[in-house]
Length: 251
Image 1: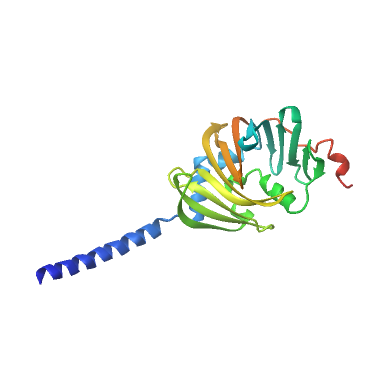
Image 2 (image 1 turned 180 degrees about the vertical axis):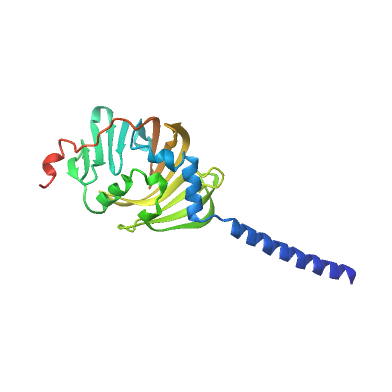
């Protein structure tokens, strides 16, 4: 009798402890705003980021499945200008970008074109210079969907719904460091909508701000690897419409 009563008591106590532990775990989950605040602090802080008004990145882009490697140069200027140049060896150059009003693409296979529609909207969103702050004013909603393992690390999974376009993305932030570990989203291209998954790593400090220097993106059967060799913050860079695009712009 004593043993049975002891077991029942132990079960009751254990159940209470388990419920309490589950409640503590639930309470421990940070809000989306807290996750973002930790991320911003981890990469250098809002004040340091606000002092940066331009940057230039130099690196490489690889498509292992196609045996292709390109030299890459990206220039970004606040608030919403960005241009990318990739040199494909003997194949020529690929230029993409936006000056805040027009969006373009120039490549040796298809020539110059103005980017329009959803593809343009996407490029304009990506050109947001201070996007790493994840300003709540840019989004309809930001929610923490909980703790998940991503790229071998415990992360908080945040869902972002962008204002205007309604585009959705899921970004994973390290529970330990606060740094972004990766993201998932659907991108729009000439070939239609493509589901992508990106893992970012190898953070290094340039001008007092941490940048991920490696990004591996999976797009269906293809994998793209981007490696950043150098970042020049507050560089004297200019983003302008390429000469091949100018005649395409309607006055």
